Length: 287
Length: 319
Image (cartoon, rainbow over all chains, first blue to last red; front, side):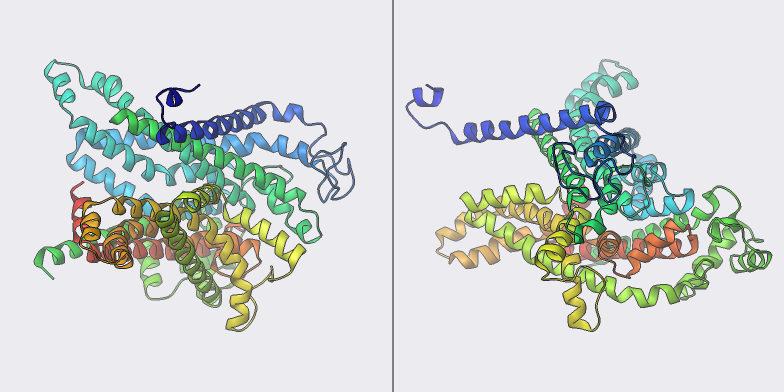
C-alpha cells in the first residue's frame, strides 16, 4: 500500500509525474551507459573485420550470421557500427569538453572583471555567434582539408557563445548574492572565491549545458560526415555509413543507412533526456 | 517613435555593422591561416601553373599589405564583384546566381512548414492538454533528436522505395514541379525545428494561460477564443519569435544537408562541393553571404519583437 493510498487519496499528480519521468531517466541513463561502453570496447566486440569486403552477401538482410545485415560491399554492418562508434561518440565529447571549459573561462572572466574586459569579450562572443557552426566547420575544412579534426575544432569554437552567455548570466547573478560580499569581507582571496564558491555554484548549469551540447555536437559532426567533409571512407563513422548507404535505400536495402541513423537518434534522445533532468536539478537546487 | 527608441535602433544598427565587419575579417583571414602558400590556398591546394600564379597574385593583390588586401576584397564583394573560382574557372557570381533561387525557395517552404506545424502543434498541446499534450510531448522529444540527414534517409526510403509519392532526386522544372520536388527536402529540414518551435510555443502559452490578466478577462466574460488571441497568444508571441528566430535564421546554412541528400543544385551543395575541393574563394563568398543573412535576419527579428513588445526588449537589455 502506497503512502498516497494510506492518506486516503490518490497519489499526488506531481509524484506520479516524477516517478514516470524517473523511468524515462533510468532508460536514458541505461542507453547512454551502453553507448559509452560500446564506444570504449566496441571495436573488440566486432564479430567480423569491419573493412573486410564480401564477408557476407551484397546488401544482405539481417540473419544469424550477420545480425544487422551486410552493406553494398558485403561488409558486416554490426561490425562497422561497432568499429565506428569511438569516432562517432568521442569526437562530440571532445567538442563539448573544449567548448564548455573555454566558454566557462571566458564567462567567469567576463563576469568577474566586468567593465571593458566584459565589453570586449562579449563583442568577440557576438562575432562567433554570427557564424553558424556548420559554416565555420565548412570554412575550416576548406582550409585544413577533410577529416574529423578541422570540424571538431571549428565546432568547439562555434559552441562557445551558447556556453559563455549562459554561464556569464549565472556568474553575474551568483556574484551579486550577499554571501559573495560576505566572503570578500572575511578576506577570502579572489581565486578561492572563484574556484571554491563561484565555479561549484555554476557547475550544475554548466553540466546541463554540456549534456545538451553533446547532442548538438553529435548531430553536427554526423551531418558533416554525411556531407563527405568529416571522417572519410572506409572509416565507419556513423555519418559516413548513413551517406554511403543512401544508394542502397532505393534498391530496397535500408539497413546500411537506417541502423546507424537509429543509433544517432537514440543516443541524442537519451542525452537530451539526461540534460533536461540535470537542468531540473540545477533549477531545483537554485530555489 | 520616441527618441530613446531611435537611439536604441541606431545602437543596434551600429552593433550589427560591427559584427558584420568583424566576421568578414575572420572569413577573409582564412586564406592567411591556411597552412602553406596563400597562392596555393586560393588555387585549391593544388600546384598552380605560372600563369595562374600571376593571375591570382593580381586578382587578390598579394603584393600589397594584408589590410589593403582585405579592403580590396571587401570593396569588390560589396560592389558585386565576387572574385573568380580558379577550380571552376568561372566568376563566383556565375556559380552562385543560378543556384540561389532554389535554395531560397527551399528555405521559404521549410519556414512555412515550421510555422504552421510548429506553432500549430504547440497551441494544440497547450490548449487541449491531457492526451493531446502528452502525444505532442513525446513526438517533439523524438523530433528534436531527428537531424535533417536522418529524416532525409527515412523519407527517401519510404517515399522513394516503398510509396513513390514524391520524387527523391533533383529540383524539377517550373514552379509547381519544383515545389513538388522540394516537398521531401523541406520536410527533412523542418522536422527538428517543428519539434523545437512546438515546445517553445507550448511553454510560452502555458505560462501566459496561468497569468492573472487571463483570469480577469475570463471573469469579465470575454469569449475564450478572443482571450486566447488577444491576451494569451499575443503576449506569448515575442518569446516564441525571439527564441525560434535565431534557429530559423540558420536554415540557409543547414539547407546544404537537404540539398546534398536530395541532389539539389543550390548554394548549399555548391558550398559543400567547394569545401571538398578546397576552393577557398567560393567558400569565402558563400560563408560571407550566409553570415550576413543570419545576422540580418536575427536583427530583423529583434526589431519585430521590440515593436510587438517594447517591455521585453527593454528587460533583455537590462539583464
